Amino acid sequence: MIPPTAEGAGRPMFRRGALCARLGPVPSDLLLKRACAAASQTVSLVLAQDAPLPDSDREVNDLVHLLRGHVAQLGALAAPGSPALLRAQQLCSDSIPEDYVPSRVYLVRLAEATQDLVAHVERGGPEPISAEVGRRWRKPTVNVLRGAVFVLALACLIFAASVPQT
Image 1 (cartoon, rainbow, N blue to C red):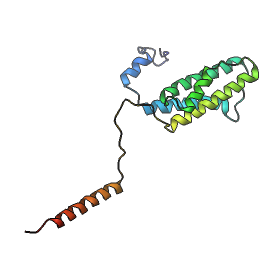
Image 2 (image 1 turned 30 degrees about the horizontal axis):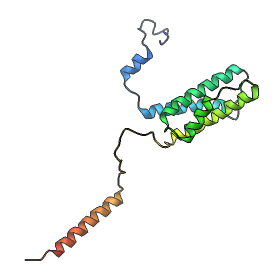
Image 3 (image 1 turned 180 degrees about the horizontal axis):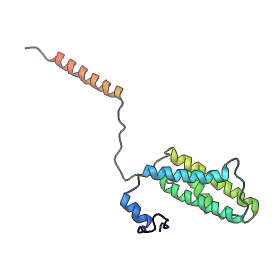
C-alpha cells in the first residue's frame, strides 16, 4: 500500500496494482526503457570509475540480487539464445563466492554481463520469435515505386504501339 501523507490523510489508500489497472496497459517500449535505465543505474554503481568496491558481504549480496533481477527482466525482453543473455544467465546461476576478492570479481563480471545485455536489448538485437507466421514485407522506397510506375507506363506504351490500327 502507498503510505499515507500529511496532505492525503483523509483520502482512501489504493494499492499500486489497482491504480495501474485503471490507467491501462503500459507500452512495451516504455517498459524496455525503464528496465534498461534501472539496470544501467545499478551497473554504474559497480562499474563507474569513482565507484568504490562494496565494503561488506551484505552490500555485495544486495548488488548481486539487484543485478540478477535486472537480468531476469531483460531476459524476458531479449531473444532466447542470444549470447549476451546466455552469458548473463550463466553468471546468475553461479553461486556468490565466499571470499573477499572472488566475490568482488564475481560482482564486476555480473555487472559487465548485465551491461552487455542492456546494450543488446537497447539496440534491438534479434527479436524473440513472434506469433506471426507469415513473412513481413519491407516498405518500398520512393525510387522503387517510381521505377514500378515507369515500367508499367512503358509496358502500356509498347502494348498500345503493337496493336494494329483500324
